[in-house]
Amino acid sequence: MSDFSVLVAKAINPSMSREEREAVYTMVRTAVLRLQERDGLDPSDPRAAYRRHLVEETIRDIESDVARFESLRKLDEAFAAQAKEHKAQSRR
Image (tube, rainbow, N blue to C red):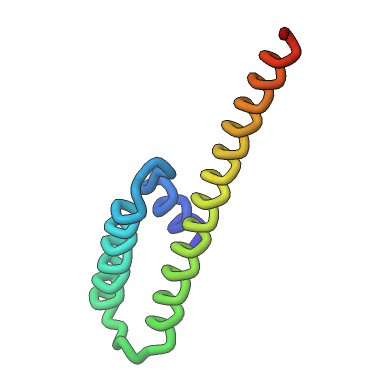
């Protein structure tokens, strides 16, 4: 499943809007359902439920990574602005 996580992570970008990322996740969910159908898995089969769970868990993990990335980016921007302001004040 780690290859799957990497594939999904490569399909999204932190600069994408939530709606754009959700569109990618919808395609992933649809693809997994098609694979299950191709494999002949009944939707009530525990293996199908397990696959769906792994997909949702992967999406949740990726969204968490995106949120972490955005938070760190904003902190870096705030620190840079603070350092610039401090430098400007020390010149006065």
